[in-house]
Length: 271
Ligand code: KMH
Ligand code: ZN
Image (cartoon, rainbow, N blue to C red):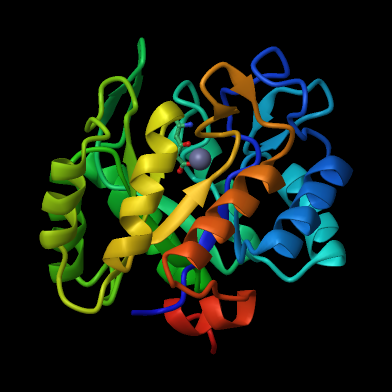
């Protein structure tokens, strides 16, 4: 089993300070949180960013500022979101890929997203995949439902994605696949050999699915984008607190945690 890669998603496009007052929003705050999370054991940061008014944006210059601030404070693998917010256009969402980050997300299908629709028709997904090839960015396939795995494998056949792929199973979104163990097992069993995967459980799904991933040889994503609570009705004090708990549980379960450069090796990012 590989060492455990812990991804932190410290701020999503939808989460607000009303949900958790400890949410980092500015470049300095996100970079400080990144540093604290790396100190605790994270090796990858999944990034959404905000404009000066605190609104979600995919503006390249805003991403650049945050990426520079993060890189000054720590060595985490930077993965930009191309999902953005459900209301954004594809042209808006793809912008940060042009900054040539180490990784970017690629959602391979459309899904209901609460009361909205997260729109990803295949021609758009193909365009995003082509952009990632052009800019030398490793995709993380964001899977909100099981058909998205098969869509990704179709893109492999078309030469737009390369094996082995890294998948992230986002489980428990209202409209997507529920966060039940049997669904995680089915998705893991649907992957081609040598692919890697992580799980991002939404809300109360975060911790049980993380424990399953630790046991099964997958990897784990935590953070305020997915879950703002530490336990039921108790808000997390920071993203780092959520990372620390996963490190502790991995230790109890005998799974060593990967440092950023070890995670780069596992994900094939070295050169
Ligand atoms: N905010 C969601 C609509 C991603 O980052 O790639 C999409 C999302 C996925 O968060
Ligand atoms: Zn995201």
